[in-house]
Image: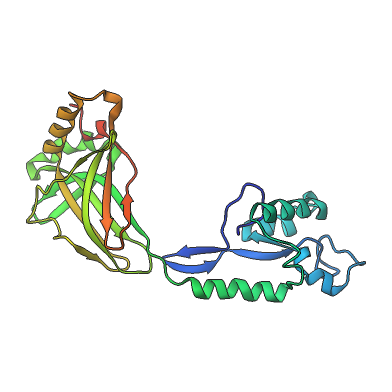
Length: 262
Protein backbone atom coordinates (compact mmCIF):
# COMPACT_ATOMS: atom_id res chain seq x y z
CA UNK A 1 0.00 0.00 0.00
CA UNK A 2 1.00 3.62 -0.53
CA UNK A 3 -0.11 7.16 0.24
CA UNK A 4 -3.69 7.55 -1.00
CA UNK A 5 -3.03 10.89 -2.71
CA UNK A 6 -3.79 10.33 -6.43
CA UNK A 7 -0.83 9.31 -8.60
CA UNK A 8 1.43 9.26 -5.52
CA UNK A 9 3.55 6.20 -4.77
CA UNK A 10 5.07 6.80 -1.32
CA UNK A 11 5.03 3.29 0.18
CA UNK A 12 3.97 2.40 3.71
CA UNK A 13 7.56 1.32 4.42
CA UNK A 14 10.61 3.21 3.14
CA UNK A 15 14.16 1.97 3.57
CA UNK A 16 16.64 4.59 4.82
CA UNK A 17 20.25 3.38 4.81
CA UNK A 18 18.81 -0.10 4.57
CA UNK A 19 16.60 0.24 7.65
CA UNK A 20 12.76 0.04 7.38
CA UNK A 21 10.90 3.22 8.41
CA UNK A 22 7.16 3.90 8.31
CA UNK A 23 6.63 6.65 5.72
CA UNK A 24 2.87 7.26 5.99
CA UNK A 25 0.39 8.41 8.64
CA UNK A 26 -3.16 7.33 9.36
CA UNK A 27 -5.61 10.14 8.57
CA UNK A 28 -9.37 10.43 9.12
CA UNK A 29 -11.78 11.12 6.29
CA UNK A 30 -14.18 12.65 8.81
CA UNK A 31 -12.41 14.23 11.77
CA UNK A 32 -11.65 12.28 14.95
CA UNK A 33 -12.72 15.08 17.32
CA UNK A 34 -14.77 18.32 17.20
CA UNK A 35 -11.68 20.43 16.43
CA UNK A 36 -10.66 18.26 13.49
CA UNK A 37 -11.28 19.00 9.84
CA UNK A 38 -14.38 17.37 8.32
CA UNK A 39 -15.77 16.42 11.74
CA UNK A 40 -19.23 14.85 11.58
CA UNK A 41 -21.12 15.11 14.91
CA UNK A 42 -23.57 12.46 13.75
CA UNK A 43 -20.89 9.76 13.79
CA UNK A 44 -20.03 7.68 16.84
CA UNK A 45 -16.45 7.37 18.11
CA UNK A 46 -16.37 3.75 16.93
CA UNK A 47 -17.38 4.87 13.43
CA UNK A 48 -14.63 7.50 13.41
CA UNK A 49 -12.03 4.86 14.39
CA UNK A 50 -13.32 2.31 11.89
CA UNK A 51 -11.29 1.33 8.84
CA UNK A 52 -13.99 2.78 6.59
CA UNK A 53 -13.07 6.27 7.89
CA UNK A 54 -9.29 5.88 7.59
CA UNK A 55 -6.83 6.62 4.80
CA UNK A 56 -3.04 6.52 4.57
CA UNK A 57 -1.21 9.74 3.71
CA UNK A 58 2.48 10.59 3.53
CA UNK A 59 3.48 13.37 5.94
CA UNK A 60 3.53 16.20 3.33
CA UNK A 61 0.08 15.37 1.98
CA UNK A 62 -1.35 14.91 5.48
CA UNK A 63 -0.07 18.39 6.35
CA UNK A 64 -1.53 19.96 3.21
CA UNK A 65 -4.92 18.27 3.58
CA UNK A 66 -5.48 18.76 7.32
CA UNK A 67 -3.51 21.94 8.10
CA UNK A 68 -2.59 24.07 5.11
CA UNK A 69 -5.55 23.78 2.73
CA UNK A 70 -8.31 21.70 4.33
CA UNK A 71 -10.98 23.66 2.45
CA UNK A 72 -9.76 22.08 -0.79
CA UNK A 73 -10.31 18.50 0.38
CA UNK A 74 -13.84 17.42 1.24
CA UNK A 75 -14.77 14.16 2.96
CA UNK A 76 -16.39 13.04 -0.29
CA UNK A 77 -13.15 13.61 -2.22
CA UNK A 78 -11.08 11.68 0.31
CA UNK A 79 -13.64 8.86 0.20
CA UNK A 80 -13.18 8.71 -3.59
CA UNK A 81 -9.41 8.40 -3.08
CA UNK A 82 -9.91 5.61 -0.56
CA UNK A 83 -12.24 3.65 -2.83
CA UNK A 84 -9.96 4.02 -5.85
CA UNK A 85 -6.73 3.12 -4.05
CA UNK A 86 -8.13 0.13 -2.19
CA UNK A 87 -9.87 -1.19 -5.30
CA UNK A 88 -6.57 -1.01 -7.19
CA UNK A 89 -4.86 -2.84 -4.30
CA UNK A 90 -7.53 -5.56 -4.27
CA UNK A 91 -8.56 -4.88 -0.65
CA UNK A 92 -11.82 -6.58 0.34
CA UNK A 93 -13.53 -3.89 2.39
CA UNK A 94 -16.00 -6.39 3.77
CA UNK A 95 -13.18 -8.52 5.16
CA UNK A 96 -11.51 -5.55 6.87
CA UNK A 97 -14.62 -3.65 7.95
CA UNK A 98 -14.00 -4.53 11.61
CA UNK A 99 -10.41 -3.25 11.47
CA UNK A 100 -9.94 -0.35 13.91
CA UNK A 101 -7.44 2.49 13.90
CA UNK A 102 -5.55 0.90 16.80
CA UNK A 103 -5.33 -2.44 14.98
CA UNK A 104 -4.19 -0.76 11.76
CA UNK A 105 -1.40 1.03 13.65
CA UNK A 106 -0.38 -2.30 15.18
CA UNK A 107 -0.29 -4.00 11.77
CA UNK A 108 1.88 -1.25 10.26
CA UNK A 109 4.29 -1.36 13.23
CA UNK A 110 4.54 -5.15 12.92
CA UNK A 111 5.26 -4.82 9.19
CA UNK A 112 8.07 -2.34 9.89
CA UNK A 113 9.54 -4.58 12.62
CA UNK A 114 9.45 -7.65 10.40
CA UNK A 115 10.80 -5.98 7.25
CA UNK A 116 14.40 -6.16 8.41
CA UNK A 117 17.37 -4.47 6.76
CA UNK A 118 17.51 -4.16 2.98
CA UNK A 119 20.39 -4.83 0.61
CA UNK A 120 20.99 -1.69 -1.45
CA UNK A 121 23.97 -1.50 -3.80
CA UNK A 122 24.53 1.09 -6.53
CA UNK A 123 26.93 1.34 -9.47
CA UNK A 124 28.34 4.66 -10.70
CA UNK A 125 30.54 5.54 -13.66
CA UNK A 126 33.03 8.39 -13.58
CA UNK A 127 36.13 9.72 -15.33
CA UNK A 128 39.47 10.72 -13.92
CA UNK A 129 43.23 10.34 -13.79
CA UNK A 130 45.06 7.41 -12.17
CA UNK A 131 47.72 9.40 -10.33
CA UNK A 132 50.40 7.70 -8.29
CA UNK A 133 48.76 6.54 -5.08
CA UNK A 134 45.39 8.21 -5.73
CA UNK A 135 42.54 8.72 -8.17
CA UNK A 136 41.62 12.20 -9.38
CA UNK A 137 38.01 12.32 -10.58
CA UNK A 138 36.10 14.94 -12.58
CA UNK A 139 32.40 15.67 -13.24
CA UNK A 140 31.64 13.37 -16.17
CA UNK A 141 29.94 16.01 -18.34
CA UNK A 142 33.07 18.22 -18.40
CA UNK A 143 35.80 15.62 -17.80
CA UNK A 144 37.02 15.53 -21.40
CA UNK A 145 37.80 19.26 -21.15
CA UNK A 146 39.93 18.78 -18.02
CA UNK A 147 41.67 15.44 -18.62
CA UNK A 148 44.31 16.75 -21.11
CA UNK A 149 45.70 19.14 -18.49
CA UNK A 150 46.48 16.24 -16.12
CA UNK A 151 47.76 13.49 -18.43
CA UNK A 152 51.33 14.17 -17.25
CA UNK A 153 50.24 12.97 -13.81
CA UNK A 154 48.87 9.61 -14.97
CA UNK A 155 46.67 7.85 -17.53
CA UNK A 156 43.04 8.92 -18.08
CA UNK A 157 40.68 6.27 -16.74
CA UNK A 158 37.02 5.38 -16.44
CA UNK A 159 35.95 4.68 -12.86
CA UNK A 160 33.38 2.02 -11.98
CA UNK A 161 32.36 2.46 -8.34
CA UNK A 162 30.15 0.00 -6.47
CA UNK A 163 28.66 1.46 -3.30
CA UNK A 164 26.82 -0.33 -0.47
CA UNK A 165 24.22 2.10 0.94
CA UNK A 166 21.97 -0.56 2.45
CA UNK A 167 21.89 -2.38 5.75
CA UNK A 168 23.39 -5.73 4.69
CA UNK A 169 26.92 -6.75 3.80
CA UNK A 170 27.35 -7.55 0.10
CA UNK A 171 29.91 -9.06 -2.28
CA UNK A 172 30.92 -8.04 -5.81
CA UNK A 173 31.64 -11.18 -7.84
CA UNK A 174 32.29 -9.50 -11.20
CA UNK A 175 31.87 -6.26 -13.11
CA UNK A 176 31.80 -5.12 -16.72
CA UNK A 177 30.90 -2.32 -19.10
CA UNK A 178 28.17 -2.61 -21.70
CA UNK A 179 27.96 -0.54 -24.85
CA UNK A 180 24.34 0.40 -25.31
CA UNK A 181 21.85 -0.12 -26.58
CA UNK A 182 23.58 -3.00 -28.42
CA UNK A 183 24.50 -4.66 -25.10
CA UNK A 184 28.04 -5.65 -26.12
CA UNK A 185 30.08 -6.30 -22.96
CA UNK A 186 33.65 -5.18 -22.23
CA UNK A 187 35.43 -7.02 -19.41
CA UNK A 188 38.85 -5.53 -18.72
CA UNK A 189 41.40 -5.43 -15.93
CA UNK A 190 43.96 -2.90 -17.13
CA UNK A 191 45.22 -2.10 -13.62
CA UNK A 192 45.38 -5.43 -11.70
CA UNK A 193 47.83 -3.96 -9.20
CA UNK A 194 45.28 -1.27 -8.29
CA UNK A 195 41.86 -2.84 -8.84
CA UNK A 196 40.38 -4.73 -5.87
CA UNK A 197 40.53 -8.50 -6.24
CA UNK A 198 37.29 -10.38 -6.95
CA UNK A 199 35.15 -11.48 -5.24
CA UNK A 200 35.24 -8.30 -3.17
CA UNK A 201 33.35 -7.79 0.10
CA UNK A 202 31.39 -4.56 0.60
CA UNK A 203 30.54 -3.76 4.19
CA UNK A 204 27.66 -1.42 5.01
CA UNK A 205 28.59 2.13 3.97
CA UNK A 206 31.65 0.97 2.03
CA UNK A 207 32.52 1.42 -1.66
CA UNK A 208 35.10 -0.01 -4.03
CA UNK A 209 36.30 1.39 -7.34
CA UNK A 210 37.69 -0.43 -10.39
CA UNK A 211 39.41 1.54 -13.15
CA UNK A 212 39.50 1.02 -16.90
CA UNK A 213 42.10 2.49 -19.27
CA UNK A 214 40.24 5.24 -21.16
CA UNK A 215 42.40 5.01 -24.30
CA UNK A 216 41.89 1.23 -24.63
CA UNK A 217 38.20 1.64 -23.95
CA UNK A 218 37.91 4.38 -26.56
CA UNK A 219 39.66 2.14 -29.11
CA UNK A 220 37.21 -0.69 -28.37
CA UNK A 221 34.24 1.63 -28.82
CA UNK A 222 35.65 2.88 -32.13
CA UNK A 223 36.20 -0.68 -33.39
CA UNK A 224 32.67 -1.68 -32.40
CA UNK A 225 31.21 1.42 -34.03
CA UNK A 226 32.90 0.43 -37.29
CA UNK A 227 30.70 -2.67 -37.46
CA UNK A 228 27.48 -1.43 -35.86
CA UNK A 229 25.18 1.54 -36.51
CA UNK A 230 26.07 4.58 -34.40
CA UNK A 231 22.64 4.52 -32.73
CA UNK A 232 23.52 1.09 -31.26
CA UNK A 233 26.69 2.41 -29.61
CA UNK A 234 25.70 5.65 -27.92
CA UNK A 235 26.45 5.05 -24.24
CA UNK A 236 28.26 2.94 -21.67
CA UNK A 237 26.62 1.28 -18.69
CA UNK A 238 28.45 -0.25 -15.74
CA UNK A 239 27.27 -3.57 -14.31
CA UNK A 240 28.16 -5.48 -11.16
CA UNK A 241 27.14 -9.03 -10.26
CA UNK A 242 26.59 -9.53 -6.53
CA UNK A 243 27.03 -12.60 -4.37
CA UNK A 244 23.28 -12.53 -3.71
CA UNK A 245 22.65 -13.28 -7.40
CA UNK A 246 21.52 -9.75 -8.19
CA UNK A 247 22.93 -7.67 -11.04
CA UNK A 248 23.14 -3.89 -10.55
CA UNK A 249 23.47 -1.33 -13.34
CA UNK A 250 24.65 2.29 -13.46
CA UNK A 251 23.07 5.18 -15.30
CA UNK A 252 24.19 5.65 -18.88
CA UNK A 253 27.43 7.49 -19.64
CA UNK A 254 27.30 8.99 -23.17
CA UNK A 255 30.26 7.78 -25.21
CA UNK A 256 31.20 11.31 -26.28
CA UNK A 257 32.08 12.03 -22.65
CA UNK A 258 35.15 9.82 -23.13
CA UNK A 259 36.72 12.42 -25.42
CA UNK A 260 36.40 14.54 -28.53
CA UNK A 261 37.69 11.71 -30.74
CA UNK A 262 34.41 9.78 -30.37
